[in-house]
Length: 406
Image (tube, rainbow, N blue to C red; front, side, top):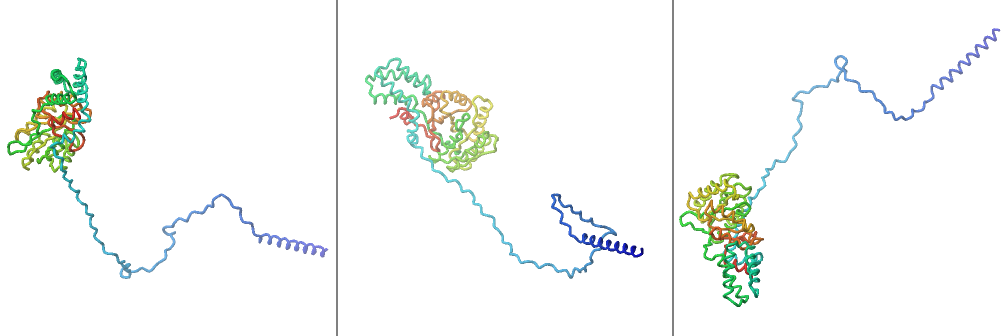
């Protein structure tokens, strides 16, 4: 019995030993690595700094005195070099131009005038060359003259004279008709006017010329071109920019003056035109100039206030002495409408001469006759283009030659 119990105990001890060996071998077996996951790894936040008694002790380092501290050595640098400001050259003074001489200028421009005006002359010659000059033909002649802006009364006078002379002439050769028409047109235009622009005052002060007209007729440009005409004739000129209402009018006039060496007297934009005109004459006297040209602002002939102001400019300028010329600038393309303008200006200031501009365009040559008849003053200058020397003294013979053509 005891032996049996001892055997059971030994068996149980053996079984327990075997079980322990199995368990210990399982503990030593390596586990496989975890499968990769798309979930991001979460790291723990850094520990917050501790303060007060919880703070970690800092490492103690030996302190240096100020004598022991050495400064870094200065690195050598190049000495600064003074940089000179760039030299900006002053703008060169504009070259003084030498205008074309005025003698024969209209003759040189005759071809340009003829291209736009000889319809009148050729039309009349064609009609007068008909074998039978009946009433219908004379009506056509009259109509041709009216279309050319000659005016009603001058047209009637010319037709009557032509009727009489053709009847007396009898046989009419082309040469006879040309001579006849030239003679009658010269009579109509007028050869007994004094068409010279007055540039001598008769006293010790300069001659004063005032340029007037409505808006858009080209007064400022005409004043600049007139300065070239006078310089070409050997006159010294001072320009007065009394057009203070139009932007850049003074600049435009000054540019014209600089081209021929003429000084421009100007004032602030919107300033008193009469004051500037007065100063211009004063400067002309001081410089000993031959002529002072005063460019006035354009104004509508229907505006009473503006026209009164023009009269004021005239009165102020006359404190230095009488005005030698008052030139009215008319746009030749306006035709008979320009006569109304001329009439009103003549009532405010004493017009002494006419400047017809744009006569090379659609203008009719007969306006020369009409405006002279209306005002009783001569056409002194005509504009025949955009060039600086396209303003020419009016010469009746050259003008009529251009009307008739070759």
